[in-house]
Length: 203
Image (cartoon, rainbow, N blue to C red; front, top):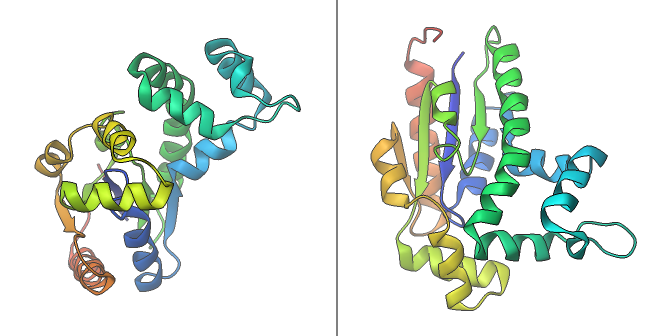
């Protein structure tokens, strides 16, 4: 069965869309890049690389990583953001590529929820790519509410990512998530039915 990449922008609704797919297609396999990154920074080797690149200031006196402080640095400084990506993304890519390969002979779909799919070239590993999108105003409002940010901070986070319009233009499917949850669920049902009706061949 196919590997389907799911991406979009920050606060466009990828996680909710994935939750709906889980309900519609029970038993399918999901890979979540954010969860993988969260686990990776607990590894001693990865922590050491982060310490070398960012210094001890991003760690507490007890040795715990201050994720908020690290996030603030990488969204403010593109050079530091790329440095963190060099530490994490090759490891994440290896993980989900291995999972997708293992899943190839399964009768179920494999979904890869990866925010930076296009930025890391991960679309080459997917049979289809879905971009979950919304208008800029809605995205900004959701982000400021979700993370208790000022508008300027939220705008900086959004601008640090590839423009959503570019992701939409490169995608196979676009899920528009500008309103309530009901239309999002309807689109998840539509795509699940579409994919189930298709004949798939291995890449």
